[in-house]
Image 1 (cartoon, rainbow, N blue to C red):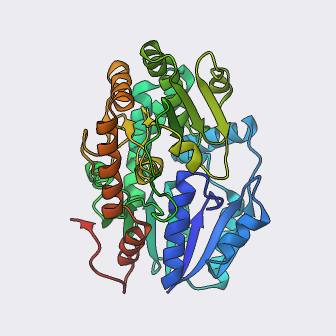
Image 2 (image 1 turned 180 degrees about the vertical axis):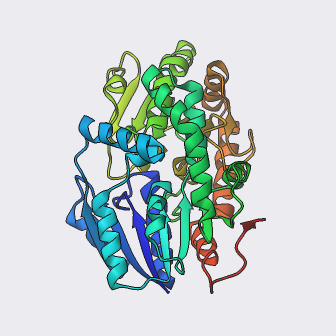
Length: 405
């Protein structure tokens, strides 16, 4: 089957959770079907990145990404007001990408179009009616906005999100119902979509881990070091780190002054960088080529997220590397683990700090969590299993997909 795979974000390098999921599922899809990729040419995209994807798919088509700035944001806001498309999605819509899509459809026949993320599904109306439509919902965007609103303090952003929320709820359900298959990361995400009115087919395709690449270290780290990995200009990560550094880490260091915290990931905000320094025990590495040494040097991996949706790849990778995890409830959403057996769950700052301190102070508890966490990842979160489930959502493939009735 010939498949057109549409994604705004080019799926390489593998330095974000979204890219990791996209690349591994794209590779699984291309192993079974003939895949053509249509994506944006982002700033910083290197020939080696494009070559890595070209080696997987039949062809790659890149469209130049428009310049970001206040003029583009204002234009998106005006279009949103007239079109009814929520601003949070309208700001991602690209006329050049749509023109390229139309040109491809005029010259080639595709049996299926795979939309990567909800914003890609905005082009669903351009797809011929006989073509199979597949949408990979990396997260439930409506739920992401809902959880962000619960903790958002900036007045203008709250105003925009409040205006977007009801329109987004309707549009997300509508777009999902236009699909012949909608992929979700977890049962939780499927339940959220059902509650929003999605009646079409849903298939659980969990995030995964490269189990050979992410291996547990021989020994549990002994230094009181904490770590976090994420895309630090992604709003849920940025806000979660601000919360952790200001509300949780001081409580940890009050009882354990030698505790330090390292945040690994690209583009930390100015306000986060201003927190860094040895007096606070905070370090930002920026983007790194190999995150494993940084994570394996930590005694505890923290996930202090207050908003978002989907399943966090970095939790799974930390668990695979044998680093005990402390997370908020939202941070661990979609992972079928047990608090106190595979990780620790804590939402209030005092409880979160106490869970971290217990894992630093109790080697037996930390060792038990790390062993069971690795077993859980091996059992349920390999990319091979994720690929099998995705392929089963396509006609003519393995019918044993885990679908939500």
